[in-house]
Image 1: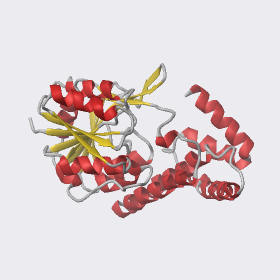
Image 2: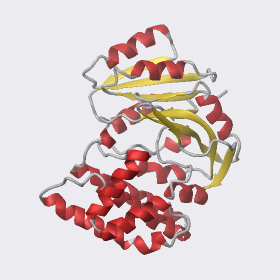
Image 3: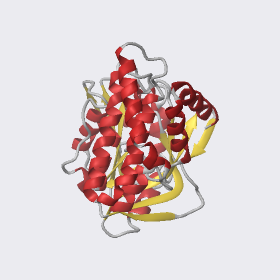
Length: 322
């Protein structure tokens, strides 16, 4: 059992951090260290972490000035001593088999440096899984993993819910101060592994917090999602030019994802919204004729072609029932 370093950035998480910590401590895979990086949090999160560390010597707590989630993860990477790394967000929690399941998966293929488990998504009392749970596992080649990620087909770009061999992060770090950092570096992650193993059994609980950074209303920083997807698709095309259709779909999706939060925008943002609409519609024909593209995206592009009112009406209906 190789040692796993579990890294948790902690900021304004006093309501959630105990559940997160306890879920890690209950792992049936016992050879791990839990690194809690208190990122200048002004609440009592740090004190809660310290109290847990007093009771369990597998926990190491580090306090630093606030630098954002990427900086906190990078700090944890510098302190980690495990052969493998796993990330957990402070407002999420994991199954007791989280590490053992990911460890089993990563050993299912030669030259595999990254494994991922299915996950739960919790919105209040509503809980759903990311994909079908009836299978066992799938081994993706690097190209196949890129394609699956570009189509949101099982593989997701989140830094959490995965196990990484330490060599993946020997030179790679999260971009400090940038939103959507997971999307930004995911192409780099895939470029460092020959194979990628996905397991259907859900192990990670994503708790949707309306106050989290990526769930805030539109701002100029939201456009960093477009930048992050551009890097992902650029690396995908560098891997294989045959991924062009998949990249078109992912780029269209990035525009749609930002546009959905711009319904009430004003002033100069109206110009940006029009530019994003034009960019999204540039991909409309390719996406609508792509059999692998989700029907949701095709419908969104068709509605956007008709105008903002049909697009936002469709978005509200989709969001109501998803």
